[in-house]
Image 1 (cartoon, rainbow, N blue to C red):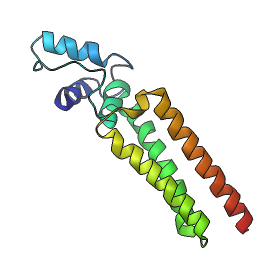
Image 2: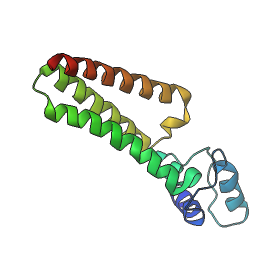
Image 3: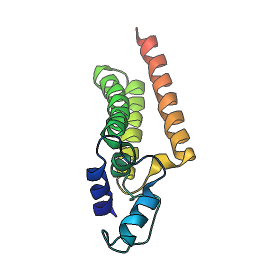
Image 4: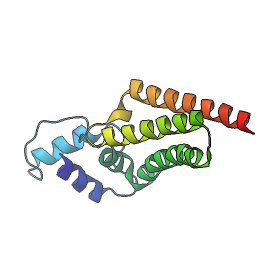
Amino acid sequence: MWEIAWDIFNEHPTIGIGSGRYKKVVGNKIKSGNAPKINLSDHPHNEPLYILVSLGIFGFLAYIFLYISTGYYFYSSLIRSNTKQIKYLSTLGLMTVGSFFIFGLTNYSFGHQIMVTFFAVIVANLAGALHSHEHEEL
């Protein structure tokens, strides 16, 4: 599945094939003999690769920016802090961001509303608690 997805990305690198079209495009590649017969899925079971295929390099850059920016926020807070509460919250934030990215290497977690909601709520709550504790530190 990853090889087929990579081939599709190479054919449409800039803006991808569009969201929700992966299964149809892979099916067409199989029918035409350009890909081996595999069980069709809605995604290639790799989130970064699926983002590349469906949204192209621009969508991928936005996806990576999401992880880099949230990870940087928690990391910078961890490095600057002297209190255990802030270090704890920062570590939880880094673990959340890192865990989601790692999980995405074998699944398409942001394809499910519950996963998007969970990520957003956890990151927002941790960031809000961090901000509150950092404000108290001043």
